[in-house]
Structures are given as structure tokens and as C-alpha cells.
Image 1: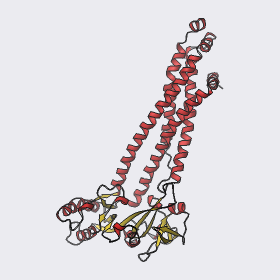
Image 2 (image 1 turned 60 degrees about the vertical axis):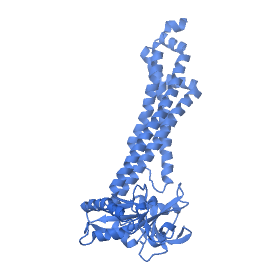
Image 3 (image 1 turned 90 degrees about the vertical axis):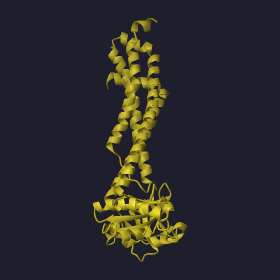
Image 4 (image 1 turned 135 degrees about the horizontal axis):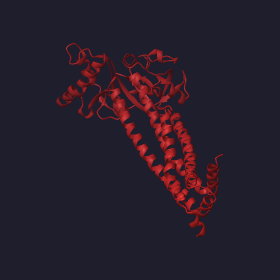
Length: 399
């Protein structure tokens, strides 16, 4: 073992409590930033995994609704779309298929959040639009039919969390519903369950009269048609609302976007989250750096006579400063590795108990977290190392 490294370890052992507190400060900073960054990476991956399934789909929901569960739109919008898509209509021939949806959140024992997403659709319309209920997506059981009024299909992720299989029953809104199929799409929808819309509309008073729904998903005939549909909904139907409140209730204004837009908005939000995570972690690292700085500097001041003796017996200024610098790096590396490991572990726990996420560990994230810890050690050790190099053997021994 290198003599300087060996000497640095020996000095750290002399002040165990102070060294452990400094390691803990580094550990907590790296733990925080690692957990936040890994969770953000997992969220981004969940959004991107869903793009293949929903790419090109136009989504109609309540204006400014952050989630379909908070969206309420007038179901008479469908009649306007059908008319506009018909011969002579303003968007003639642009809509290949569409499906109205009702989103309902059900309390569940599955997952850390204790909720399960229920989506009500007409099965045949869903198969023609997005295709989650396509037969090829069902490794177990069967898909839903338009005649299934007391049946459900569950995504494989939700089924695993709920410990449900084919033939089991789930209680939704107080009703016993039979599981007839388990689907897999490698998207966030694998954490949900689908039922016939006529069942789901009975779960909430606002949907019982069939006047309102949550969203409408539209499959355009091509990408260009998708743009025309969005323009029609956001411009023409907006004008229609203003002129005729009897047609589409103004209280429930609608807007159209495609999933790529929604995903981009999600990424922008996650970018902001990542930025805040960075600054939050940076504050933690600065605090940790001050702790390491204080610990190493106090050690230097307490060992001035010892350092003076070492210099008097042949140690150079460079060797003296390097030994002190190594002490700082040892503290930061130990704390950094510990914080990195536990940070990934905590993120793994949260994603494993979530119905929406799978753990994604980006190597760049790990490198960033470790670099933060090393930089902490470098900056915290510079001044104490410089002070050690400035110690005069004659002055400190004689004095």
C-alpha cells in the first residue's frame, strides 16, 4: 500500500467520529441526488415506452386537464366529429377510427399508491383505434368483446401486483368483475384494467346519464390527417362552443393533441424536475463539502506539530499536501459509493411497488453522482492541503 494512502487512513481512524460524520454528509447528498435522478430516468423511460403504442393517436380531452382522470368532455362532440368526417364535412375522410373513454381510479391494495386505473371503452372500437385489446396482446386468456358487461382484462403488471389470474374476480366499485384476460403491451397501460364503457359509466354520477365522457382517442388515416383533426377541434369546435352552448357545454371545453405532444410536455416537466433535483443535490453536496472541509482542516490544525516533524524528517511540501488531499478523497469516495448504492436501491424499491414504473438505471446518472462526490472531495481538500503545505517545521517545532 502506498505510504501516503496508509498514513491518510491512519489519520482518519484517529478521528473516527468526525470522519464518520463527514462520510455521512457526503452519503446523504449523493443518496438524494441519485434517487431523484434514477426516478426521473425511470419516468422518462415509461413515457418513451408508450410512444410506440400511441404514436399518431389524437387525444381529445378537457382543456388544461393534466390527466384523463381529471378530464370531462361532452359526449355530443362525437356527433360533431362524425358529421365533419362524413362526405362534404370539414375534415372529410381523415378519421379512420375513434373510441370514447371513461377513466376511473379504483382504490386497490396493489402498489404503494393504493390505486388502480380502470378504463372504460367499447372493445371493438378500441381495437380499431389504439389496439391494446387486440388478440395478439393477450398471452393469457382472451380479449374483451362488446358483449362483456361483467368482465375485465388486466395488464400483466397490474395482474402481478394484484396477484390475479384468469377466472379470478376483482372488486371494482363494489361489483365483482371476472378477469377473462391478461394483456401485455410494454407500455404504462399494462398497469391498468379495461372494462366495457357501459359498466364504468355507472361508477360515477357524472357519467351515468351518458352525457359526459373522459376522453376520445382518434386514429387518423395518416399523419397529415392528424394535423387537420387537431386544427378542426382546436379552432372550429372552439368557435362552435362560443356560438352554441346547447351543442357543446362551454364549461367543459375540449382541446386536441397527439401523444407525441403529450409525451414532450411530460419530458419538459421531467427536465424541470431533473434540474431541481440537480440543484437540490448540489445544495446537499455543498453542505457535505463544508463538513468534509471542516473535518480535514481541523485535522491539519490539530496535527501541526506532527506535520512539522514529518517535514523535518524529509517529507516534502508536495507529499504533505497530497496526504491531506487523499484523506478528503477517501471520505468523499466512501460516502459517494454508499450513497450511490443505496440511492439506486431506494429508487428500485419505489419502482417495484409502483404500478407505473420499471427501474431504469442510466450509466450516465451513476457517473454523474459519483463525479459529484469526487468533486466534493477535491474542493473540500484543496485548502486544508494548502495549509498543510504552508506549515514551517522550524516555526511550529520551536514555537
